[in-house]
Amino acid sequence: MTALPLIVGMGGVNASGRSSFHQGFRRIIIDKLNAEARQETFVGLASLMNLIKVENGSLVDSQGNLVAKQDVENLFGQQILDGTLIRKIEKNHFDPDATHVHQKITMQPADNAICFEMRKRDLPAPLPATWKVTELEEKKVRVEIEGELEVKHDTFRNNPIKAAGQLPTGFEPANLYNSRYQPRGLQTTIFGASDAIHSTGFSWDEIIAKISPDLVGTYSSSGFGQMQAEGLGGMMKNRLNGERVTTKNLALGLNSMSSDFINAYVTGSVGTTSTVTGACASFLYNLRNAIQDIKAGRIRVAIVGSSESPITPEIIEGFGNMSALANEEGLKKLDGITDGEADHRRTSRPFGQNCGFTIGEAAHFFVLMDDDLAIELGAKPLGSVADVFINADGVKKSITAPGPGNYITMAKSVALANSILGEESVQKRSFILAHGSSTPQNRVTESLIYDRIAKTFDINDWPIAAPKAYVGHTIAPASGDQFTMALGIFAHNIMPGINTIDKVAEDVYDEHLKITTEHWDCGDMDVAFINSKGFGGNNATAILFSPTVTLTMLETRHGTEVFNAYLEKTEKVALAQKVYQEKADNGEFDLIYRFGNGMIEESDIVITKENMNIPDFGIGIDLPTENPFSDMI
Image (cartoon, rainbow, N blue to C red; front, side, top):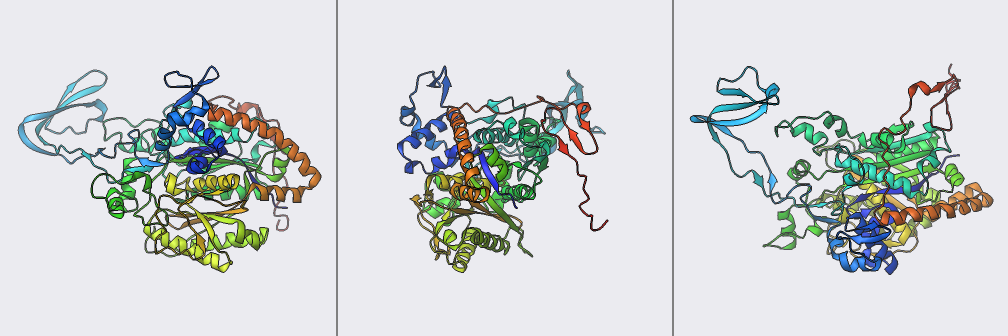
């Protein structure tokens, strides 16, 4: 019997806000919420953005004035709306109007000299004849070089790329724990993994007490690694800036660090760990490994996710020089603007008239477990994952061009959903979370795939949602953005339209699709198809079932008596979830950061031929003693 992987926790953050309890989704559809949910969303975002905080049990603003929850929107509403979603790049990343650049310099013989200081050990050998060196304190020297220095004075440039999907203004994960010179992508990893675990309604110890410690898995990656100054960015440019490369730059820069940090500092896991990178499909690649291990019984609990902080001048210039990003000139041309700036809120326009994608940053993490463990614990499902299909594109001329692989992943996904839920469910109550990158090529090629699949499986008015319109393209976590939106749709029965476009572009294939510019009430939905098309031919599609479908499947498999007992357990879990939601909405995140806390003494490990016992874990680890190839040996 194949285990069903249930999603029982969700945490993290992107440009729309916190992903736990659908805060980010609610921000996107804010005008469709009822009064209670709207107030809750504004309060949660205000706390996340450090506009308000809890002090002596009451909400106060930055001046210490008491703030009632019902007044938060009136006081800070516009500031919250302006400080979320895609917007002009803020200076905590870099200044898009004055981006620093190095200029080429030349030396010519003259009577004058250039003077500067450097470390003694960095002096070139042999010393050039034109260099005069004077000893200084602290192992430094003063260098005088004869000659005339010709310098161009325009050492800053007006960057043509000005918008990004940034984390909410004022949210600084580094201030929530002792971040110890860690790159931003790892800071958000600690935040997202902690948020996901707390959102389950259990402590991590309560979960791990039920299983052998080797039946836990962590599956996460970033696409580019950690490119901030604390990671690979510092390793690459510190020397050029006259600074030293630190002992942490290389290690903390690796793209496996999002998995490693969760194991080492959040869960203390000794189980499976995995990092898979598949460009823009990286989250789904990691998810597939997790659910395959759950189905095979290799693990029972997984933390799956991705983190990316790619809003740096270097990454943006790389994509910009490929003509992949929407720039000022292109956007102004689309909108007929001759003076002033482009509308930075509408730089990402999936399936509309567009000129490139918009970079974004995010971290998304999900807690998954097999259905037996969920039943035992009383874990509430946000949904469940039937499968993830991955296929490449075959022979290419351009490594970034699309190909046939995404036809395969989508067709397999719809066919499997049909076989599990039936045609009527897929035809009437399914929807697509599109890759929707906002490039002219993607809007044509991706819509053609969906339209042909819809025609093949007799689907009409197939709803399409595209989160990149609101949060940008976050690279590795991009399909995590799609996952959070899909789970929000299941929870609220509201399908987000693409309100950054005026209308669907003429070259989009949408005969069988429903692409709207407004949010709309969609009713109960059964299944979402999460689609991703990554550079290099990294195509992936996941089948995500709704909580309602998941509960029906649980009752069918486990029987009514067991299922009713399970529902009673979920009531207690729901109360614990509510406690954390209220704390998180007030900015009390209780990040889990176990730096050096609970380290295992290797000398205390007990080993026999049949099993191992590791200190602080209640259940031992069984060693393999049966021959899996008994028919061969």
